[in-house]
Image (tube, rainbow, N blue to C red):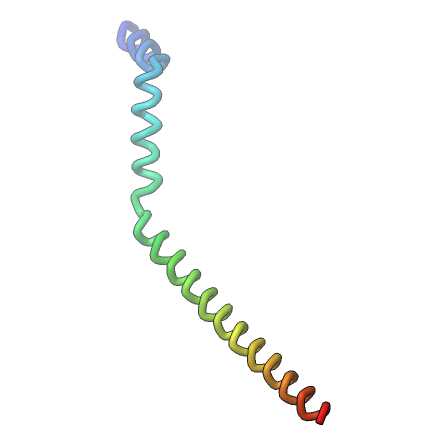
Length: 73
């Protein structure tokens, strides 16, 4: 019974709760490297797609500009 009372007293302590939360956060973020690698791969794909889109847009605008300049002559 004394053990249960001491356990309740320890669990109600702010510092004990903070230590427990930090321990849980450490377990939850144990696989951060894999998460970062996945995010990097996704971001790399997004940047590649965006760069291709910008190049295509510039090509279309340049082509339209050439056509309009030829029509004006």
